[in-house]
Image: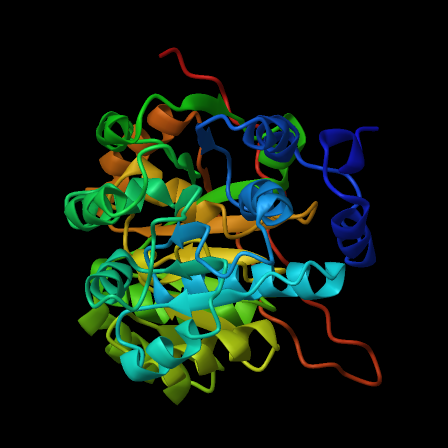
Length: 398
């Protein structure tokens, strides 16, 4: 068995991971860590939940100089929640391993005066949004001349039509010889082509194992569009959902959906880009802590978030692309657990589902009838019945 120390990770960091019961590196970590330590630019593609964040944080933290009071690494992330998650993980690793590396989150929408004050502590690692990092650099509050590492976490989002110019602006502020590291679960051709302005990174692609693919079952339910919200309610009542994510495409529809589910007594929260920061943090804490059964979210808001033990993903709205479906499905069946993705389709979307299955090599199965939990009688325990396992996916010729 390959260990983290075999890859060049320090004993101090390996010990922190062992305390968290992370003892064996994943395939993306096995391939990426030695190359990053060797100074290679990387473009890494691996399924969600396979440890891409650790794949770059571990080798970067080992190479930062705690005695050098300047920013040495910049990590860009597309959302506030993801950036704070990365910063928190980096901070925890540094503190528990005794590295002395200071970490600062720099996100747009947050109090800039407070961020400027925190920058006086001279963090070696900053994590944030491209817009805020550029703003602070141009104000002279964030010095980037000493940056040796640039990370694009969820690079497909950071290099899409909406964000690629801002990402390019950050790159222009950095030294030309910085090491570039890009990671995502999907690799659209447009994003890979745009990544060329960062040099010629070595591509590492890791596909889901047979066991990982078998752990996630893919179902569909045919239902008229106007009855989709009601079907989510019925599924929540009839399936043993402990922690579920419900994906929608339109923010305005989420409020109506959330209100209807709560009216029916379902413990639901929402994670939407337009929500206040405190509200989004509260929603994430509720689903992680078990106080909420469902979390309604748009694709961008949930991108890259590590919400453990999600057992069901429900696509209330049909995903806009195969890559979007992959990101949604990747929120469940993580860390050796089983999970299911249920896509609600109206009659017009049946053809889209067939095309999606061919593109991803997935055979969607109609969701078997799931009986609702029956109140216990005469001391008998209540039983809940979930869907049976789906058939293995057929391979489609490309």
